[in-house]
Amino acid sequence: MQVAVLVLAAGRGERLGSRVPKAFVELGGKSLVERSLETLSRVPGVNRLVPVIPPGSEELWAALGVSVPVTLADPVCGGPERQDSVRLGLAQLPADTEWVAVHDAARCLVSEAEVEAVSRAAEETGAAILARPSADTLKIVRSDAVESTPERSACWVAQTPQVFRVEVLREALDKAEAEGFVGTDDAQLVERLGVRVRVVPGSARNLKITTADDLRIAAALLR
Image (cartoon, rainbow, N blue to C red; front, top):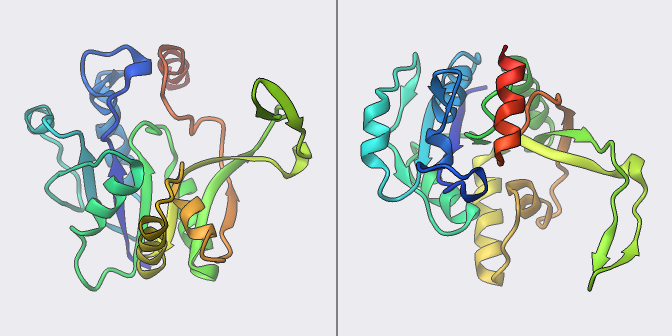
């Protein structure tokens, strides 16, 4: 199984309070996007990496001088929504690409084993994600009031990578665009096709760095 990975690094990171886009923030002497690319490049079966960066950050990208042992495509400038960035990244893949993973550069502590596991699971149904069972009780809230409380045992927190057959993800993106639907992750778009999305347990270490507190937690995990 050969997998191309779109590494989404196009977020501005306002909640992190950084002067540079989030993926270019340093953690332990390396940017978040560098750490993600290096880990992904060591996963057996990953043969191509496509970084998706914010428009106007080309010089920041060039200054990183990233070098990895698999094909590293030229960076793609992302779009206004996540699914726009994914579509732009997909357009850079060779025509014969069968499998694609989508990964947040901000989840730079993902393990090679986790990426391998979710890739294998995707082979069964055409789609799989990493996720963790929710430790918290979740509430559905409308107009500042609780509408309902879903059963906690059925609630999982989605992570990345999320791995799909390329044609499945393309179809999901086309359907969302035609219907004016904007999702919060790629699996949500695929679910709307009726495709079964396998879930592979992820780890707490695979956190998404969004705030300054997240960055401090990630630094502690590295130490």
